Image (tube, rainbow, N blue to C red; front, side, top):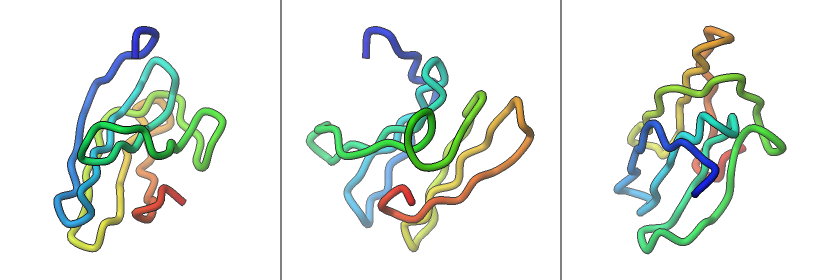
Length: 81
């Protein structure tokens, strides 16, 4: 991720996934437990961010991402939709 700024990282133990906020590219990336890339939200994918900041997951695998510039929280399912 040479051209990225990873600000926050969140793990979903139940789903064995790692979610990383990449604020430089206005996206959130999902990796498996071996750090292999799986998908993304934002930028050119599902959801749009102007400055993603914080990220958390709940017990059902939903992902919540705050957008600092737009002052919103976006919710995604475990697949990033």
